[in-house]
Image 1 (cartoon, one colour):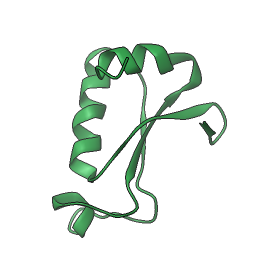
Image 2 (cartoon, helix red, strand yellow):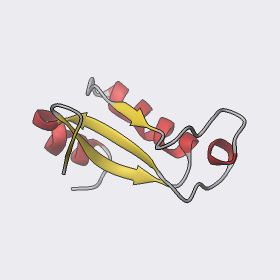
Image 3 (cartoon, one colour):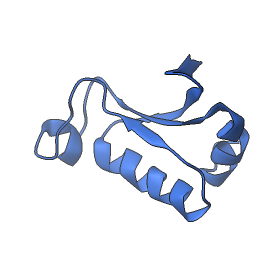
Length: 75
């Protein structure tokens, strides 16, 4: 599943902080990433401190998908 010009969703999380933690793991192994908040989950909104029904997608470049899955233990 591709999104936004060469980026693909590696995982979808229930809250922003979970996606941020996974993004930190990708940072530690030098894999670029982006977080798609799917409609404005804000710092003080329900998605940051708790669950959001829309989900929070973690995207990586298509070429990095396998390495990202391995780094996140999704392989």
